[in-house]
Length: 167
Image (cartoon, rainbow, N blue to C red; front, side, top):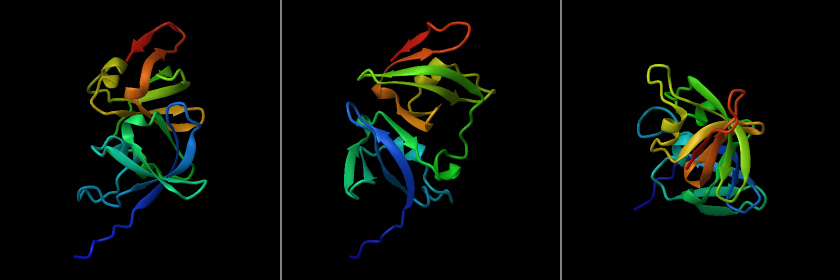
């Protein structure tokens, strides 16, 4: 029986794994997600139930099959359209400046945005959500951070710079 080929959408990304130099390449996204009439987003791909995600490497055009749990973070590349990054129902009413420390001691300072005013969810509640990856804005772009690779999140603000949420 012939297989039906699906033409996928490409999203340029840079990704980091433990104790490795970040790599540039692409993720492929489904053009239609579960008959919703819209494409899959990078955040949905990373929070999917898939154990392995194909990553097309920029430098040698090879394909790596990455175990999703071993990705520290993914930065969205230039030119990726917003509707391919976040699902349309994603809200961000709250924002907190944080320093994220990963298990391998890598650190990134970023803004985490989450929730809506109706739910009034705290940052610690958001970090305890079931999604493996959360979104953040760093100086080098939009990030999808794997919460399972985080050692701690330190809240950085004028009133108290010593707050930390242990993971």
